[in-house]
Image 1 (cartoon, helix red, strand yellow):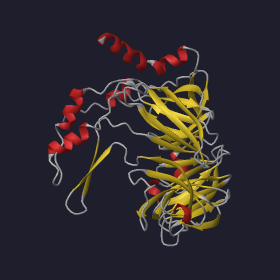
Image 2 (cartoon, rainbow, N blue to C red):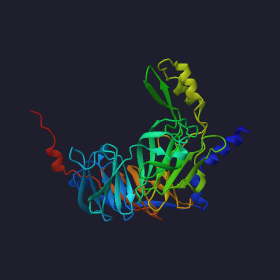
Image 3 (cartoon, rainbow, N blue to C red):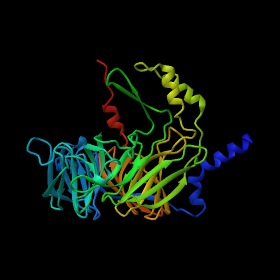
Image 4 (cartoon, rainbow, N blue to C red):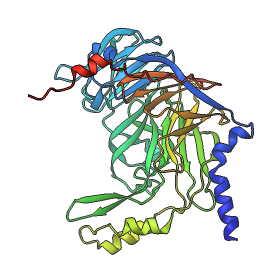
Length: 417
């Protein structure tokens, strides 16, 4: 029986690699398609790029590092569009780049510092500023379903200026038995801040244990081998992907993807393979042995609270993206903890797996569609666009250093005095 369980786990751990061999999902490859060099980016007034946003027409907007600085853009061919929107200083139109996305060809920026959404047209002109509502609040008929919220994080903006937001800082005026404070809520609000409907709920601090100390002091620590859930939202806000790795006996060896539209309706709900590897108790015990107490909570109490939350199986999901064409990429790491390689399962708009792709080491992926991946080259500090193709790209040989001539070598010999 023990051998059978081990064989089953081994088989499940090989499923992502076995898919192409079955002929169900082809393995595709990423090849260079466009490079915007660090020199080009610096010429526009930015340092090392950190985040980008890709428009439906292929334009690439560069987000300033640490969200302060200048926002500028390149067209789909890599040519600078020649404009810059300032996001720093007392006279800047944007105080802080908190979030961003697209309404058709218009780029929007959520600015929590000034409490506004700024709309930028394709020529780099700020054409409108939409003030954040003072409160995110329920309609009167739902006053016991939601509390009032004093702030929010913008996740999408729609053509009618309604928004997809995560409301924050709840303030209860009446009893709200229909509201679960342990969950974060993704809600659609109208321009005045009234909640039209809940799109999704999720655990905001998944895999984190928070301990209360003296007064208001808190201390948070990760649960060993925690399995993080991922949420990916398309740039226009019309698709929300909830990606959850299976870590129990019932769902081990799978990753669940639930795709929702902007109203919270389910587009598809599917499971895809991931390695099924049990968490080793010896590894858990080793980590828990190093845990200390906090405040009035003893070390043993903290360890007990962490132990019951350790998943039975390990998660190998590391990221998820939804493209402008509603393609979803689910990124997984290999079982070997020291391996740097990553594979992505590419899903079409209906949830069908259409490709298995090896991601290049050294590239941080930031945007995707059915045919491309955009990211940051961590070594060259540039922006790259890679295209999917059926064959591996040719390997570029690293040029050998020039040979040293006898004369040159002799010239470097130090002559003792």
